[in-house]
Image (cartoon, rainbow, N blue to C red; front, side, top):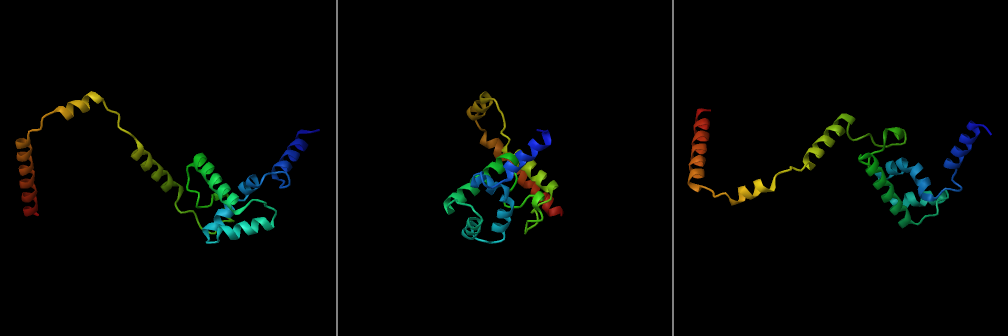
Length: 155
């Protein structure tokens, strides 16, 4: 048996719907399902259509499978799953919401927000134990207010 024959048979197994579970088959058409749901079609209607084409899962099973597939894709790519991918743009009814450059910019902002500051606990204790000179702070505040008034009166 040649390698190409083996590869062809394996691909046929991977794409045949007879022996594959419903969830695996659902993954194959997931982008089309998402586009349909985004267009406003109810899950129940999508589920009925799938049942007409040989899917045997219940509506609850369908919803659970959608949830799991979305979760898996989110973990793999970190992208918004409500917009269809560029691969299935022909099946999509809505365009991608953001260009790729804007997506990367938003990811960078999110990462910056999630960065935690590392500090020395001894420094924190020293700050908490430090006595505050309210009189000195009051003078600083009054000086700052005077500067603002002077700047505002000049403008």
